[in-house]
Image (cartoon, rainbow, N blue to C red; front, side, top):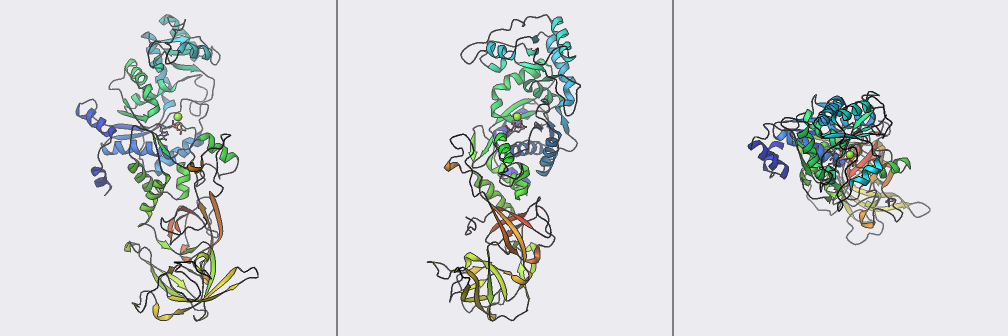
Length: 557
Ligand code: ATP
Ligand code: MG
């Protein structure tokens, strides 16, 4: 089914480029990659990049690599390597045995640098970082050549080797490409390609004390892996001439080409690492996987499925223009994905007791309930029913407002999958709060019995009190609201105080026995919920609301 769907979607600009390359014989295969730096958790934007690259490889019968771009040891950690692998697998982007680390190519990168030196295309420079910046010029001013630019090949080779052998202090010397200080593209003004930095690398340890710069390393990594289309985001567009220069001057055969697309931005979410770090440190969120965040781990914990994220990425498409996508689109995708797949269960989030005064005592009736009316394949289950039930507090009003069709004294409603009941009154505590609602039922009106005597306007859901299981439900709203301003004047986040509501006295039917982390359900009228992977136990189930049902009356708002 999915393959058919792909065929009817018109081709995006990247596919058009690939078609052209294949028809012109520039490449005879397609090879893509996802190249994360292991310096944090992946987020929804990365999911887009992963699924785009994987999807292209799959579509063209090519291959997809997962490659860690681990050339900068300062911020990289094994913890992130592991979480990234888990996330990529979870998304369904199969890389088989093609898991690579750029750090395994350090020797080849070094050899490439030596080749450039020999060709007179690279030189060792003694200018300080500040001086290099100063000499570089800007959009209006051409750059000035470094006084070290014309060192002999022999001297450069010797000094570069000394850089590698640890003869110089960190920052004392750099290797620079020798391109063009007057280029209108500042990236081409003799960019630094190697620096001296004594840092222990998570993979290579202390083997190296020189590390390649991203713009030099990345094209080499792609070329070594025979990548054909190196897809990256728009901010690298100005770096493309340098990318092309590196693969050409390092003499790679059939070099890869870079194609840029716009980053994915979502409204009303926080993606900046700096902000998330602060939210985590200030204990405002429960770690990087708090269900209000949009790291892939957070989305998974909230109950998003790989299918829903794939649908989202397809809907968003690829573009050359930066824009923001409404968070509601993500919600749309998860609703679409789950609505036919998951059983619809009854759960009461804000309970109040309903007593059916004319129903026999100590009797439990088992009603046959379809798991999903729109998908008979999900079968049926038995739901216990009895004299005492829990219903939602908002489903009773002693003095009904206009157009209120639920329970109020004298009104008859349908208890979903059960009987018609007529409200007879309520009990209150000393403060006037309703504690129990009373009603009577009509045994003739049993659901499924074919009763057609009369109709009622309201249908409410319920859970039998004697067999109910008490659970916790967590309801979420966006952590920031862009309409109200995402940032305060001091630059801090303008947080939504209602982003989390914890409801500890919810009741569910007994059919949740065996519910495990990440299992998800529709709770009728209340939304889609997912068993929390961190805090839920069989004795104390904790559910995250993934998303509300669009048309439902929202509780907790
Ligand atoms: P961030 O700046 O959000 O921390 P990053 O660019 O530093 O992300 P990398 O590990 O360098 O993260 O990125 C890996 C890949 O993911 C790159 O190819 C990058 O272009 C892509 N990518 C990063 N953010 C997005 C985004 N918002 N939308 C689409 N692709 C993205
Ligand atoms: Mg980056």
